[in-house]
Image 1 (tube, rainbow, N blue to C red):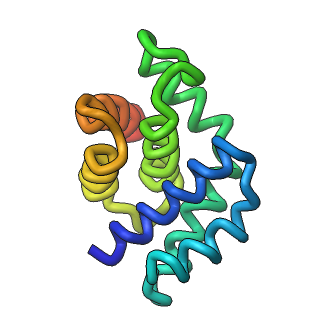
Image 2 (cartoon, helix red, strand yellow):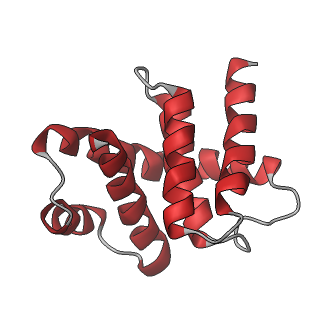
Length: 134
């Protein structure tokens, strides 16, 4: 559960950066206190945030290639940002357990997204994982 909270915090920060151009570090520091993210998980969460923002263009291109019916800017910002964070973890973190990252992204999507978010996030992330494992 603790890594889920770290992933959820990462999603919230990336979402804020996407929606209101928030300062990632300030948003993270606030959420660490507000959501009581354990110190042992703060590094993991911050790595997800930094990496996602650094690789966002590449990640967005991949998400867009698998979501042909939804342009990136037309899809739910919740779904888009959950997928960004999970895709970063799947593609770029060496110690990532991709299946866990996808499962937790689905749960976060169910919590913050709409009725179809979990399925949509699952479908896109499965395709990204499939391409990685190619």
